[in-house]
Each structure stands twice: as structure tokens, then as C-alpha cells.
Length: 98
Image (cartoon, rainbow, N blue to C red; front, side):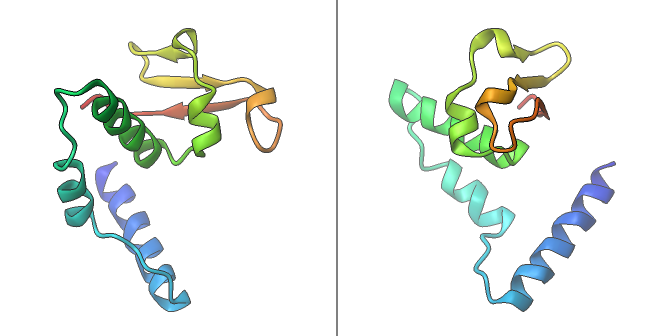
């Protein structure tokens, strides 16, 4: 499963390279995450939001509409009602536990 995901990332990076888009590598992304001071509430919040966005691929507006009852930590999914998504369709996002 991880290998399939890794190959999808590789395909995306090749696509971005051919289109002239700049893409941060996984290593630079991890370095960026280390800059957050997790002892401060605001930076911890931003760290969680950044991880959620990068892990699920959801839009920032969708992320900001998430309520605690929309998250199932046991199944590791987040539910977004249709009125909160761009396409006005119900969305389910799977996230990793880190």
C-alpha cells in the first residue's frame, strides 16, 4: 500500500516537473514541520492543520469547517457534509495516526 502511494507521489512530482511547478520534497516538508514550537497552542494548532491538509489533500476551507463530531479516530476518517465542500458532495477523508 505504501509503495502504491509512493509511486503516485513520484508520478505527481514528474508531472509537476514537466509543467514547471515547484514542489517541496518530503524531506523539506519534514524540516518545515520541525519549525513549529509544539508547546504553544497556536503553533500546535497550525502543525495539526498542516499535517491534516498534507495527509488528506483537503482544501483549507474544508479543514476549517471540521467539527469534533465529524472525526472518527477509531476508523481514522473525517466526514465533511455536502454544504462544506466545493463540489457540494459528501466527502470522507482518511488520515494517518502520527
